[in-house]
Length: 221
Ligand code: AMP
Image 1 (cartoon, rainbow, N blue to C red):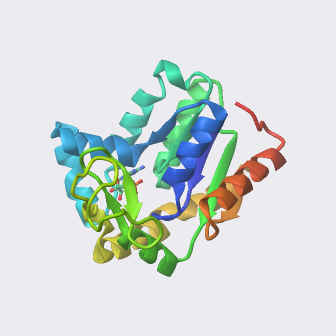
Image 2: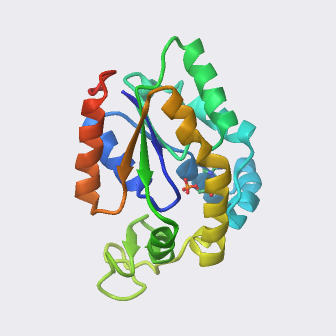
């Protein structure tokens, strides 16, 4: 099964991608995670990506397309994958279509998780992560036992630079202008399913599985 998760920042794509990857036994490919890892490791790619990420802008198409091209050839992608945060522009979607065509295959589903701007801001400004062990929290919905401290390893929790309100507004603007046109792009290909993203994690997960079932293409890996 080859699946794309679309939606604004903070729609819960990452959380749902992890659940779906487990459910179908296929990898989750997140360009955001790959880029953040490169920044943390101080690689050349990381240095390039950081300046775009910190301002809420998009990393150039050719860079992320290169990352995906390489990642998709790894053996664990044989049964399919879940793309989380890619494609984010029409040019990326076209490059992806070209890659898939060369491999003689195509996407099975595109799930759009729909969430309004104010809800995105509420969710993202409250997000905290542990830089030590990677555990995630939310100051309103999933707070740590002791404020600012990781329950799992005692690390000091941080807020992602791109989760500050000003940057979130910039990311939303980028989303509306550059990524939202993908909804029509995949609608035209009859691959799109839109799910309201404002329920709890379990409800959204069930709604996605139900939507995949309705698509006659393929609902299993
Ligand atoms: P995410 O974790 O998916 O919200 O991504 C965090 C940041 O990484 C974005 O705000 C972009 O700067 C960058 N990024 C992730 N995926 C892409 C992509 N497909 N194209 C361009 N930039 C990306």
